[in-house]
Each structure stands twice: as structure tokens, then as C-alpha cells.
Length: 212
Image (tube, rainbow, N blue to C red):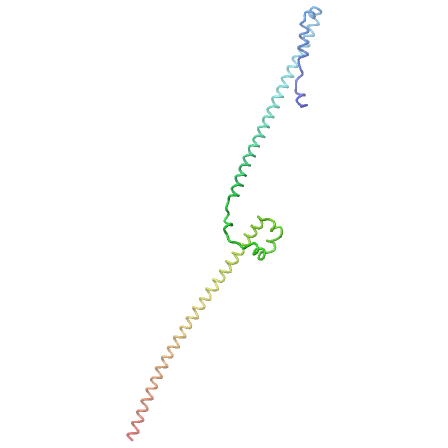
């Protein structure tokens, strides 16, 4: 307000009133020379007032332009904030409607998590924060599944190795069985031949005794 008063030009009404007084016939008849001098001073004052008014007008126009520019800048900033607000509201709504896959994943119950998870994953601070608790439960579930998957791979590898050993042993057993069967057959043949040989020998002995 004080700045506006400083730039406001002086009111020209007193000067105009003085000029009106000079054109009064009584003043002209009194002393025309003094009237002329007085009129010159008043016109000079009037011109000064006019220059001051023009200057004040320019200042007010610049002030108005600056204020308008500031207002436009503020309005633009407000529009940007409103746009950002609407964008954030849409993103928040998308997040609220988003159905994450973790909701369909079977995980350890909260009791199992508290029992099995490491201490740093189930501190009081974590248990009081629903979001962080869910993140920790998912991390624990991932670690457990990775551990179980690794165990499964190791067991599968051991199974494959045992199967190889079993096949090798089975092949060895088949080979030994074949050898035993072969030996049995050879033994049976030898036994038959030996029996035949003994039978022949006994017959020959009986014939020789009769001939004697």
C-alpha cells in the first residue's frame, strides 16, 4: 500500500483551481503582469504534474504486468500440481486394484514363519509393520524354495548316481550268475562223463572175471 502511495502522482486539482481563479475578471483587472507570471508558474506546475502522472502510469503498468506474470506463473504451477495430483491419484488407484501374483502363492503360515525365519526377519519392528512383514515372508519363502530346490537337485543327483551303481552291480551279478550257470553246466557234463566212464569200467571188469 505504501509503495502505491509513493508512485501515485500528486492530485492536480489545486493547480486547476488556481488557474480558474486567475481567469476571474477581478484578478485580470487587478494586475495582468502578476497574473501572467502566476499563470506561467501554474502551467509549469501542471506540466510537472503531467510528467509525474505519466511516470506513475508507466510504473503502475509495469507493476500490473509483473503481477500478471507472477499470477500466470503461479497459475501454471497450480495447474502442474493439479495434473501431478490427478496422476498420483490414478497411480494409487491402479496400485489398489492391482492383484499381485503373491496373493496366489502358497506360503508358510505366520506361525511357521515366526518359528523358522531368522531373527532379523521377524523383529518386533517388522512384526508391527504389515507391509515389511509381507516382504520378509516372501523373501523367506523364496529362500526356502531355493534351498529346497537345491536339496532336490542334490538328491536327484545322488539318486542318479545310486541308479548307476545299482545298474553296475546288477550287471556284475548277471555276469557272475552267467559264469556260475556255465560252471554248473560244465560240472554236470563232467559228472555225466565220469559216471559213464565208471559204468564202462565196471562192465569191463565183470566181463574179465567171467572169462577167467
